[in-house]
Picture 1 (tube, rainbow, N blue to C red):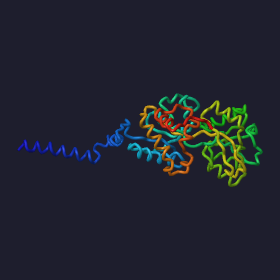
Picture 2: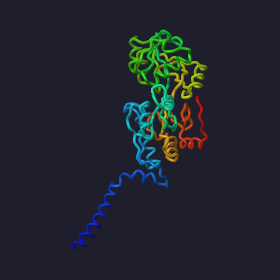
Picture 3: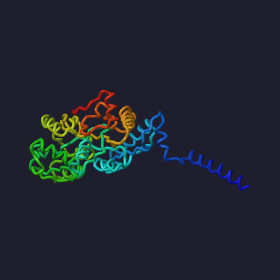
Picture 4: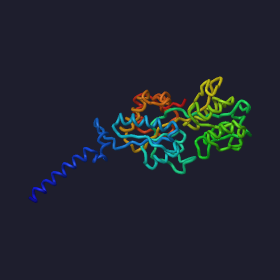
Length: 334
């Protein structure tokens, strides 16, 4: 009788083990098994994409990319909220995420350990750039400011302390033989900057964001906005010294502008951990850049493989490089 009970117990345990596995008891291996479909073992079970706040552009785009990656690789993927560019570099460094949104200039500072980074982020590689984050020097017609030189002695918002915008302002002023000491610098957010222009407490503001920018559109609804242009030779000098910049044109009609405005932009981009396999990064890159028509966000129209290396100033991951090499695409600052 004891023997029969023992045998019954062993059989019951075996059945329960199979049931638990079928119901997810083996959940730790679920992602890996999916990833092995098609004969590939990518070496990871989950892909997390660090984005930004829920009200920004990075988060909804990240959700779209997560779906594309999951469909292409079988790996469970998701977008996670964060403090955006600079914080995302720290998340990569701590290996808390596999993929992250950032700007090309912030990625460069991270790999160099400069500006807001006290040490180098040494496990960071580029996947591809996405769309321009335009450097806009915003003022109004009544200010009389028409050129960068006209900013001398003026009260100018140069971006919040430690921000990428502040670095952009310093570098553009440098191209014109100026420093922050040549202006009355204020460290304001974009919204506070446009409010300050409107109420006359500041004369101009540096704003780095995709165009049209909501805060500037709001200002343009009540004021005759002027976006200060950059000269071609200054643009070329900036790009030569700081290769994460790319040429950019703010189109006629934006903020009621009567003509195109030449400036520069850094690029929103995706970076990955350097330890991710070449196969995984290749398949993620292909999934994103060959399915831009499936991106349910307006910025999807600006994302293309042809422009995905513009402004890329950090080392590209070998898996992404393989994809772009196959497409015949090489880096070119525009």
